[in-house]
Length: 334
Length: 138
Image 1 (spheres, rainbow over the protein chains, first blue to last red):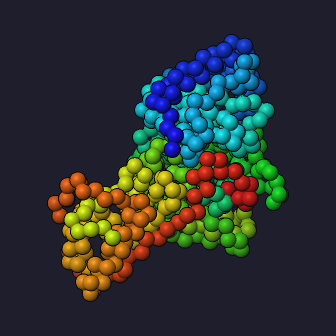
Image 2: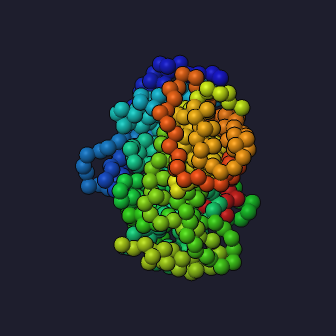
Image 3: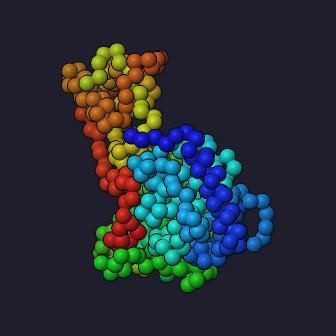
């Protein structure tokens, strides 16, 4: 298997940083700070058009209050370089699951190359600096508009006990119910049903998990993605931030983990063992974001050990689903 | 089948695992496959993860479980062979043998351990898993 030369990634990172600087000189910089609970991330877009393409789902996280920045992400379009964008120093064969480029050094520079969209994310782990290049802002795919910058935010926000995970979360002042499960399990259905029946919304698909003694679900995106027609080429992205701004919750303490499963018929709630919950939640998180060698597994295990877990059969009636979430909150509220 | 005197160690470069309430969950980062073990299998995994060599593990199993010793040894050896075959553990002659296995002293009936295998996440091992849109509900 081809392996990237040891010096290739740091060299490419330096060259890409220069490419960003040149792009920013031409287009001007749009600087936006985002706040995720106690973390502040600064995005520096080369050009307003790219900012418009990627910021929609992150609008609720904008924070102009100033303060210390925990990480920066510089973003630009490859088309901004008239001579053509820098060629990747790695062969496609070196691009592994999740787009992680083999040869990445987690303690220095690592790269994620999403070859389907030809988007690249470069991370200087020590500096908490991220470079993110897209080919053309008009070609940003729907899933990237719905949940943008996942690899970049993974490193900008992650750390010991903090992980970007595949889960939704809804709740209110009593706390949150974390919705865990693979794609198609019903997370979005439950999250939207809860939202429509008055509960707060943290996420339908991806969130930042603080897995400490009081686990917390932190919102990343103010969107929910639902399927349209069976032959549709894209999901419909629901802009919760615009439609129901008062329902968005920046974060909620995790009181329970619910594992939905599409069943049809009546909604049904039952207790689930922590091991069953972990089996439903951990693989989809670890394999979708294989950027930390599976370190998230221990944190997810810590959460399911700490809070009650439930299986939720997702029926056809949204009110029943919302009621099931209510029942979980009632049983687990402290 | 791993030989006598052999030590088995978790292939930490590819495998992460957690054991909760008597169920072990194993994730192979290189293949996209995950596994679970319960009962006897989870106890065996605890010993393997502790670095117990094969001989000590088989002895510990015979001391722990009620049943035909031959059947017990066969059942445990088959599981170890499967763990090896799936790349979850590797043989490591240099691994120092742990002091002593730590299984509960109470004897329980032997149930042939089964490695439950799940392959539904293997799509993520593709470089570009096409973002399918048939996921009705996220």
